[in-house]
Length: 438
Image (cartoon, rainbow, N blue to C red; front, side):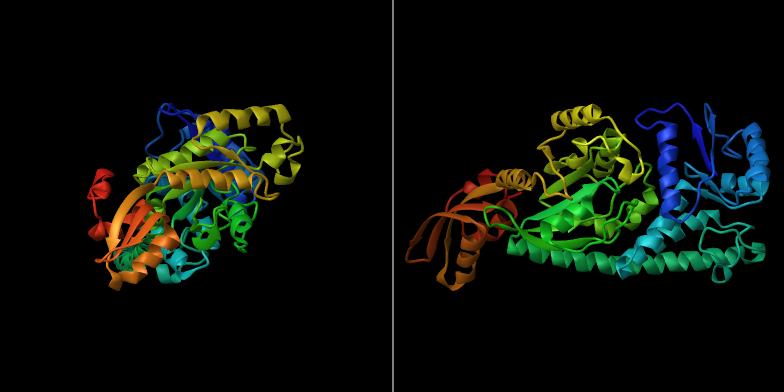
């Protein structure tokens, strides 16, 4: 049973109906079968049971009628709300955060992804350990099922969970440091990095496969891919770049999940350009995009150069959208949505990842944005630093080259992050003028 409360909110982008539809899609992704919804309008949530007493009684009556065996709540419950509601309903209660973590646990394939999911699960579980939870080693059915007698094991369980959290953090810190070393090597090589971001199921992995000839799993499911993947690709000019596919976002993304995936999300920090993939055929395309932008702002990436990839335009030219399960849509509405998004989002490019439409314009737009991050450089490189001369020719744009007594004099342009390596050999104040000294 899907359960949600409608309350006055500062931002009314998502209606309760739309949010519950997404909750149902999450449930199906986790292998569950939604049988109905129960909603209630509240000025504020009930601190004891989340819902009012009358709605709890309604849920009890529906349980006898429909024989459902699980309740999914569209918000994160406090530990006391979770305990009280389970006691009243005599069945497991799973809130939105727990459900997202369930889906993540199913999707994580690499060891890094599994570690990140486990950390988020244990941090979610720690404050919710109480009488109804059994000892972790004896739980059945996963971290979110109800257990047998566990009251006497409560402190032992808490100590075990804290120890596991500390261990997972240490191991993920090792992953973070390894990624940081890899990013430093990439920066020294001067290869620009592009990162795909977007709402889950917007088509990031399909676009990634089409651009790089990779074989990343791409399904019409939420969080079909969870683990980051990076591949080389070439732009029309011949410039080589790295393209990274990252985890998809979702509204009400729990802070514990964002924190646990810090090592992965740091890939976005080091990216030169973000490619924000939007599913323009989705009824909540704008709302989804705002959820993504909010997460980017929370990560301090609001000012990162960004290209908006308006995906699935092949469906915008056909009224038949039945294949994705949402039913037919009005073609005129989709075209208007496309025009609106092109006006709203910076460097907007309409594409179809499945049919490879719009790729030439997309890559051209990426080159344009990367071009804005290049700087003028005037250096004299000693002859014993021949590798730097070769690097300038490979990664930069050489406008003039002469051989002087002290070394090779090069004048041209370099990507900003690569220009730092040449700063010790500069012959004028050009680098300082563009702020590289900072």
